[in-house]
Length: 197
Ligand code: VGL
Picture (cartoon, rainbow, N blue to C red):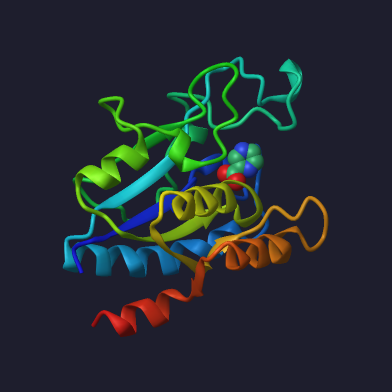
């Protein structure tokens, strides 16, 4: 099924326990993400790590009127992929939230290094199905999943490879329900690996 791509959302240092905007239990996404990366490499599925790549001054950040601590600033340690994530070579990195006024929740607002929007790229390479995992279930994962569905992609959420911020208790569970209602398939990495082995 070379029509499949793996989208890994915001597995970036600042969203892990030592970062500036830690997602509870974020470390737990690393093993399932590494497992599904192995499968993607075996199948030659494009691996697409999506990253927050904010300018130092962004309307996304509290000091500039936004909601969040400063995080994932371009070219800083916090914006790097978690060191235990075995992305491997030849990934297609997508950057989002790269300008002052861009919030960058959805990977589909992001672009590849040559400026191609994620949705355009997926179409160009014939992708019809996306597997999505990462951080955080109730923000960037949800926004990316809902946009994938709007792009008419078969969209599978790797539920064990996601964790929620849960600013309000239950936000993560509500996000899962919302994604499901919009047409996403909720699965585990184990199920996907079994089905494709
Ligand atoms: C995220 C809050 C702020 C996310 C990004 O990756 O889900 N959440 N910026």
